[in-house]
Length: 85
Image (cartoon, rainbow, N blue to C red; front, side, top):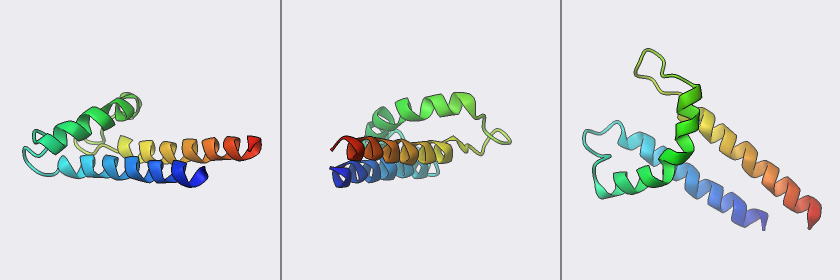
C-alpha cells in the first residue's frame, strides 16, 4: 500500500515540477497540457502562494514549500497506514 501512495506522490510531484517549468516558456500555460496541469496543480499551490509572497515580485518559492509539504503529508499517511495495517 505504501508503494502506491509513494507512486501517486511522485506523479503529483512531477506534475507540479512540469507546471513550474511551463511558466518559463512563453504561452506554454495556454496550451492543452498547461491548462490541464493548471486545473490539477493550482488548487494545491494557491494556499501556499497566499502565505508565501514572491521574492522581488518574480521569484515564487511557494512551489518548493508545497513540494516539501506534499512529501511530509505522504510520509504521515504512510505512517498511519502502517500503524493500522
